[in-house]
Image 1 (cartoon, rainbow, N blue to C red):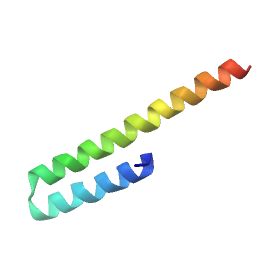
Image 2: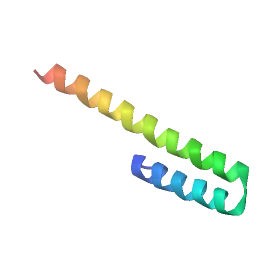
Image 3: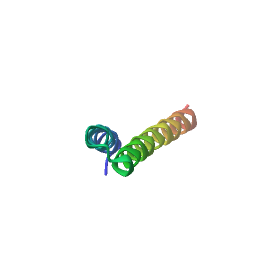
Image 4: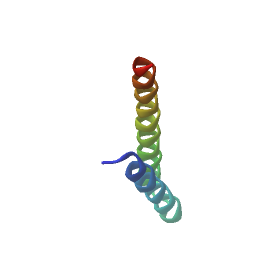
Length: 55
């Protein structure tokens, strides 16, 4: 699953969990968002390293 997909999926789950009072779903949504951010940050780090190696 893509980075953006994880983040969007997480936001939807969190919002739906909030609306329905489902704490587990809300927590899962926050986890999915964190996974998306972690993937994004790691991809950025890899890109920076690759860029430095090309220099």
